[in-house]
Each structure stands twice: as structure tokens, then as C-alpha cells.
Length: 255
Image 1 (tube, helix red, strand yellow):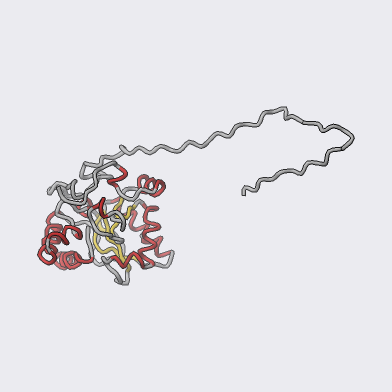
Image 2 (cartoon, rainbow, N blue to C red):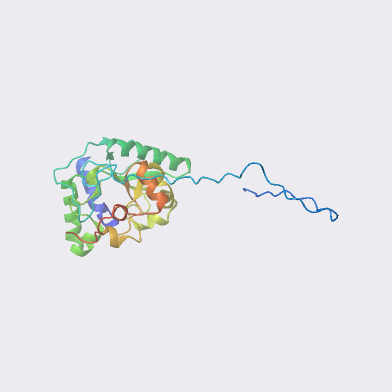
């Protein structure tokens, strides 16, 4: 997890290491006033429409606790082990720091960036996988600069960052404007991501009106890969956070 105020830490790490029915009714002929009206009954009964069943969704298809699970929920009350290191691969997209993600997330990012380009928008990856040690360096820098209250709102403690899963990516405009800043949300790139990222299996993890649930400020740049099944389902039912969908406690503070 990153923020405008963690950019210094993120970029310093990079330096250190090198996507009618129109109802139609026939008009009946006028009845002959000299003859009684005749009622015609259909010989076949009108079939009763069968409602299409709403597909059920298996919310237990993946673990939400196993560190290597596609659906693992990481927040201020659900840390990852300090020893967890996912298998990651390079992501061939424009970037400010060399991007590394798990295979499925990497492939989805390539597709997402290509779709944005078709719509005339150029994106860049700003931050992807960060190890436990990397996150400690980022957090300690913000802690020294900002104090604990602000640092805890802006930057995850080591172990509590989604970036350690290898399934999270911070995305910005290739131009660099509003990189890791809330103003990205009002830019064409930020609006496109908010409207389309779910199609490729991503969730805008820290929405503007869910700070009390996630514990982190609005981050229009931070997207978490969940796979298309869950991402599409969350979009369909209008649920914005993993905590709410899985019935987990809100995580505004660290345990």
C-alpha cells in the first residue's frame, strides 16, 4: 500500500535496486351491434414464465487467510508472516519502478494497460511487489517524517501491506501527473481505472468513503488483483471492500 507521502520511500527503494420490448396489442374489430359478442378461448393455456435463477457465488472457493491465496485479506488486523515471499515475474508495461507480480496478476495488468491504450489513455506502474523488509523501510521513513497518526493512515506497517502478496499494483498516468496522489481520481486515467479495472479482475482497494473500514486514506491508484470471478461479483452486487464482502471486522486501527 502506498500514498503520495510514501512516494519518496518507494522511489528510493527503486534507486537502491536499480491495463423494447414494445408490447404490441392487435386492434380487435368492432363488435356487431346486432349480434352478441363472442368470447374465444385459446385451446392451449398460456405458459407461465420461468424466472432465471440468480447464480450463486461460492465465497469459500479460496482461503482468505492463507498468504499465497488469491483472495487473502490483508489489513491492519490481518498481517502476513514476515517470512512470506510470493513467486513473482516481471510485468512488461510502462513503469517508474520495475514491476513484479504473480503470474495471473501480471497477465491481467498487461490486458488492462492495453485496453486503456485502445481508449486513448497511457498508464504506468508505479509500485508492485514489496517485501516485508522493503515495507519496513517505507513505513519507518514516513513515521520519522510524519509521526505515527499520519503514517498509520497513509502507509501500512510491514506485514500489513497488500504489496507483499504480489497481487497489488499502484497505477498512474504515464505522464507522471498526480502520481500516488488523490488528484489521480479526477483525471481521465483515474476515472477510467475506477470504471474498468474490475473487468480485468482488480478491485479499487481503498475507496474514498470506506476509510473507517479499510483504515487507509482514499487511494485511487491502488488496485488489488482478485481474479475475474470475485472482481465481477463484487461489481455486480456493489460491494466495495473485502472486509464487508467476507463479513470481517473493520480494520481502522492496528491490533
